[in-house]
Image (cartoon, rainbow, N blue to C red; front, side, top):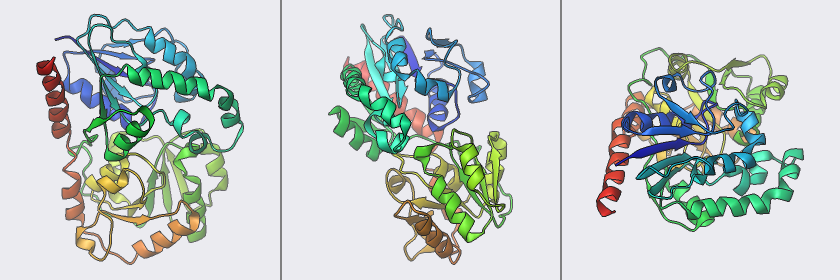
Length: 363
């Protein structure tokens, strides 16, 4: 059985890049493809692999450039010659699912149906970017639906993702949760008195209301991440808010461990950051909608069996109230770490391998 692994593009740092690397490590017999690969912009672990790229590789060297070239990227992925493969496993939030698999089975590990197409206003906001894409939206949605029809099996990373796939693509899926590296994300460092926010600094991540909240609270907040909104968010932030940029995994582990809590602002279909924080023994203050409902145990009246404190409006005032209430609660570090251990890499790899083995037997 000949296997190919496909990812959207490897020009950034995010949860999907981590999950795909775990796939590459499990299926070391597979050939690896992606739209474009920039070793300076993504996880260093990819340097050990032989990665095949599309004809757009010399052009698409960053996440920002990918957004501008998205329509062309769908055609570039369709042009990849995968005719010799029995199994093609795509790891996709955008364009990997567009590949054509003429002689084999296409399995798509789907993070979310393309957010820019199906959640356009949330993704771009009401600005010139959404106005620019609107005239082409009907055509791009049609292309996306056609690509989804060519997928033989969908795997969803969460129940929330499964619901999105069913609603948009009208296809059912099997749930295999994305993992975290619980061996790497652990630390015995002492807690500080500051809060931590880890995110790509993009409009749809809704970091702005956290900046507003901590400006009002005047509590120390450390922000990890890069993105298009970085300059704007820095201009809004008071001196109690520190921007750390991109960090290595070792540095990130230290930041997770020392933080009083991790702030999680977006609606996400899953989200590895809260689990990574929990693995380091740190609770999360999170917008309580989406995949986080599946991965976190929200505080009610039992702080010994909780991993997070939820708030339910994406506003500065709701977050402020949540932080103030959180400060009166003591969480159980050992329960939090034990809870996170359920999302281990070996468990994920085993489920993925078994899924593909079952398909091979049935075919």
